[in-house]
Image (cartoon, rainbow, N blue to C red; front, side, top):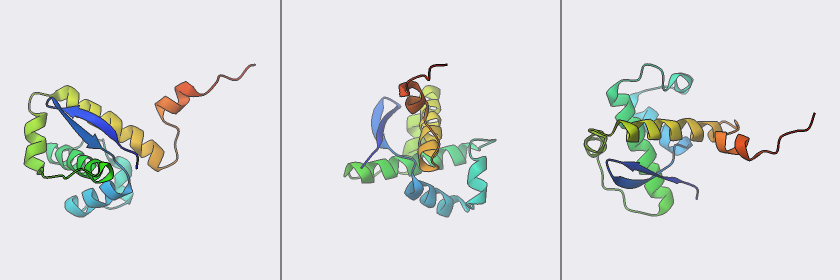
Length: 116
């Protein structure tokens, strides 16, 4: 199964923000399906940590690797690693595009340009 590796706090973690990760995130935060479209706008720190937790938990499941972290562990890894948080949110945006059938930035770059 597909997943990506993301480095947060100098630790490489399998990560995937698909429907299963979103399902778990919604269950934990009480967010509805309609509210998912606003993810990324005015997110609290708790929201960011829980979203990254759900993505890394799903990434581990897809990779067939045991996952024994907590949300607190994710927050600890994010301490002092704003770039790791930014990369996680960029990966979230990319995976959401794939989840909802939008073209990812990588796919756009790989597409041959049409001649005029």
